[in-house]
Structure formats: structure tokens, C-alpha cells
Length: 330
Image (cartoon, rainbow, N blue to C red; front, side, top):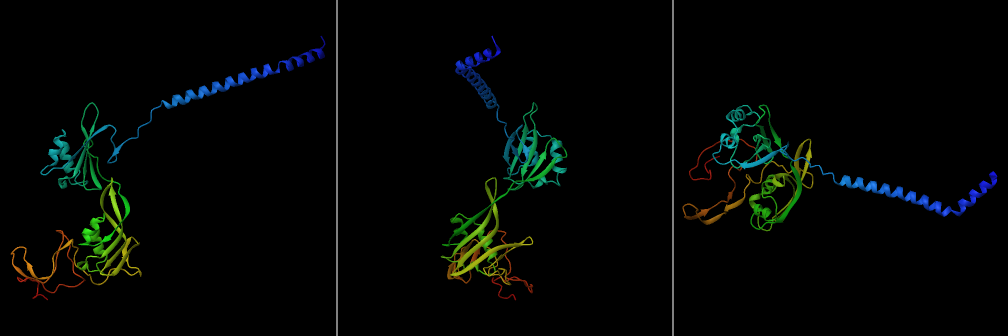
């Protein structure tokens, strides 16, 4: 058979079986695709079986994954030795904490009611490794019970929220702020801010207020007030404004005209919570039970509240007046 005839025969054969060849090629291609998909599914299945890595847990800056945490509170008449011996801490370690680490934190200053924590190892030998004492809401002292040189004071993270308190006074500013969900200590802040412009002894029913202030939190617990950013007080129809401005690291409050609220003389010489006794010509004395004139106003304040003069000056005389009132003093 000639070469030309062979070529012609092959062409005719391919044409007649073209569909068969295409099906075969398509089948091979489909097999390859299915094999790849199945291989990918297996990899995905294998990956899904990998366990999630647990994030380490920290307390007081220490990873506690390998420790048991024992939390307690300092009790009245409880000393360091009582606390430590309860957890089998030896006397040498107790002495070291009391003397060696006194510069870090003087252990004699521990107070009843304060929280303290032991971190106890989970090894074959169970023993306390760290002791932590909470100095206050934000600071704590850490003592290593196995390392003679390891002790430090740490600080919890403090978050600050901007909050608003507003309301109308029905009895006292202190009670009005508390009744409207604000921190009652805002009363002291406001009395400091407006001390030169408002007589807080003259606050009366119907007066209103609105305050924007910083409220500080540690672990979700409110721990105190920061700066009062803006304040409004309507006292007997007279409006008072205060705006906080900080410059060169020092903050002051200014009125709407930009004038500093600090003046030469204070309107009131102390911070008070309530009026305990008003001006009267016939007041029954709380101790003697005798009805007699009371020509003055008594204000109740917490023990330790500072009492200041209304302005700078010089003391020229001091003395005791058995009648009260100091009528004979200059």
C-alpha cells in the first residue's frame, strides 16, 4: 500500500471514531479533576481535626495556666505569719518578705478587707509560688515565694469613660446627683470648681445642673472621678458655666467668656453633704432638748473634710470663746 493511501485511510478512521476519542479524553480529564477534588477534601478534613491553641491566661501579669488560684481577704487582727502558715510557707520566707522587700512594699501596711491571692503550683510538689496583695483598687504587690530577689509593685489597667449627670435639685445637690445615676462625689468636684462664683450654702430646691465628667474603671468597677470636662449650674435663676482646659500639663476651669473661675475670695469655706440645722428663732437643741434661738446654719460634712478661709490672709489672733461664735476675736 502506498504512503498516500495509508494517510487517507488514517484520516477516514479518525473521522469515523472522533466522538469515541473525545469521550475517552473527556473521561480521563474528569477523572483527574475528581481525584484532585477528593485530595483537597481530605486535606480540609485533616486540617479541621487540628485542635485550637488555647490562649494563655494572665493574672497580675503572671501566666496562671500552671497554677491554682486561691483568693482571700485580709481579716481583722490577721498578720502575715497567719496568712502564710496557713499555706505552709516557711518562717524564713515570711521573714524575707517582712524585711528584705520592705522598700518594695512595707508589709506592716496591710489592712483588713483588702484582697490577697496565692498562686499554687500544680507540680508533683504542691507549693505556693507567688503571693499578691492588693494595695488599693489599682496597685498590687507581688512576692515570689521561691526567689529571694523577686518582688515588685504592679498596676492594673484603668479605663476612662465620659459620662453625663443632670437633674433638678429637690433636697440637696449630693442627693440629686445620686438620684440621677451620677457619682455623688461630683458634689465635691462642683463645689471646688464653682467655689469662687457660687455659694453652695445657698443651693435651693428647683436649682438644676448638668455635668460631663471622666469616670474611671478597673475591671469593670468604678474607682473614682477624673476631670470635670464641662459643667452647668442654675442657682436661683443665675446660670453658671465651667469648661476644662489644660495647658502645659496644668488644667483649669473657665467660664463662657474664657475667664478663669478662680477669684480672690471663696463663696463657701467647706464642702458639705447636707444642712443639719437651719436658721431659727425657736430651735429645739438636739442635746439639751431646750428650745432657743439658733441664729446660724449648720452644715454636715464627713470627718476629715477640709475647712478653709474664703481668701488669703494672716492670722492676727487666736483664742477660745466659751459662748461660741468668736465675738471677742478680731
